[in-house]
Image 1 (cartoon, rainbow, N blue to C red):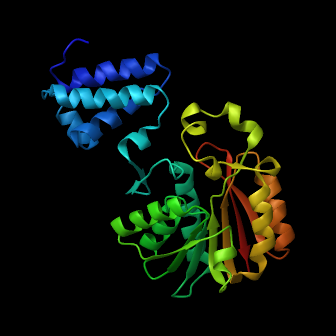
Image 2 (image 1 turned 120 degrees about the vertical axis):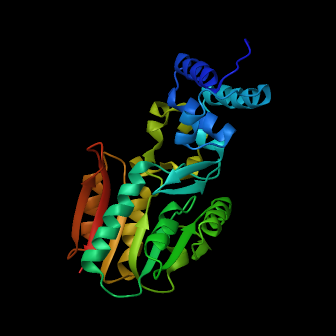
Length: 285
């Protein structure tokens, strides 16, 4: 491989290589920023700077790894969510922008329906902790509890909470089992919701490198929504809020589950920025 002298040359070569291998060329920029320890604007300013042979070799190893399907976030060890940086690894789902929209809508509903000073918020299936930690950072007076069935995921979430100075009560257990000790004002969840039959259609970066326990669910992806709909009626204050992230074809089915569980609640689906059904909310009055 021809030796390169400048940062812009390294970026150009990596972008072309990734594109030729069917990957997003923009990943090259993220990997180069990671290697050089630069922000986006810092990288732009450094385009005419020289890159050392050692820097390029380490950068290129990651480029080749990503070309094979390893997610960029696993190579850099982090992902941004709601303006904050979160650690991620293969034990947790990589945070998605759609989940930021779940947070945004929930905060709006809290401002509209829940005026009490101290809120009790639970996040079921917290993974890397992005929902629970973001809610605590946005509402510092809230008491936030987060659960997961995976001890490894809880350890990663606890690291993120420590880095972001968010005091969260982490509990190991399945769905609502760890939060039966009280009633809650807000219960949020981004559970596994992909049907097993959909696995072949997923990107290999998702299917082969993210934890299947955080991706797939039985009953065409609806299994965990069914179970939570059964479990949650005795766990909500009135007024209270439930917010679920869903698969884009699951809006009507999850709405029905919540309407059956909470006949008097206001239940609705909300689309994401791509105009797909992505969230279902229930407001228990």
